[in-house]
Image 1 (cartoon, rainbow, N blue to C red):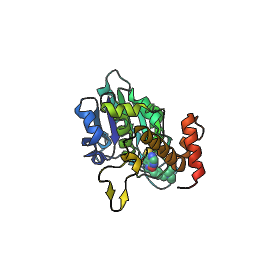
Image 2: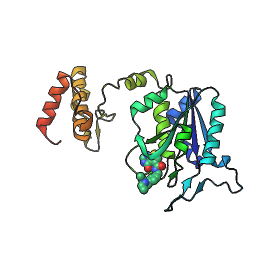
Image 3: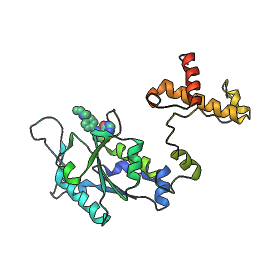
Image 4: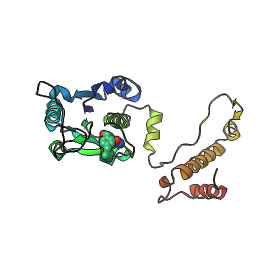
Length: 247
Ligand code: 9D3
């Protein structure tokens, strides 16, 4: 997979591509990341990438021409493969795990990072782009969003994760929050590990973890449970949790 990031702030990415799962995917040769500095594709002597908005108002708008030229350089490298193009924007459709899984099948992905007041709207149809937001909070531009998207897609590339992690990632059919976890020592600053986890009783442990996962999900993310059908076991655990009231 090749992942190209078109940006006015190439410096934003130094370091972040050399850590964690993205580094592993690159080292294994499963992922190539290309940072494309849009300013390199300007044609005037000042390297102008933005301009005033037609109709007036505050803020600057990213110009179409340098973006199109930057994209054409991505196209040349991509050869026969037509890239999936995303534009980061607060107006975009919300990014989800399902969207990440869908992108994982693409050999070429290009993400244009929005900045300023926005991007000349004509860029969207000209690139055949989809607009994407990562959630309802204000960022100062799309660079952080593009790293989120890259990270979530990179870890889905077959061969990137170890066996244990990919098995877990596959169990997407059970979208509950995780139960709490503990490691040594058994007591730390007066706080102890739940006795059940020390019991060695695997069935009790499994049931406790399931209950805690359901409890946290119910209290923090009820949207993940409502409108979903539960197994008989989950239903009875959840009934007990509701009896308890607030934790
Ligand atoms: C709708 C927000 N705009 C109201 C006047 C102002 C505005 C806020 C933030 C305009 C641009 C930005 C920059 N944000 C992004 O480029 C962005 C973003 C985000 O802010 N939140 C979540 N996902 C994304 S993806 C790109």
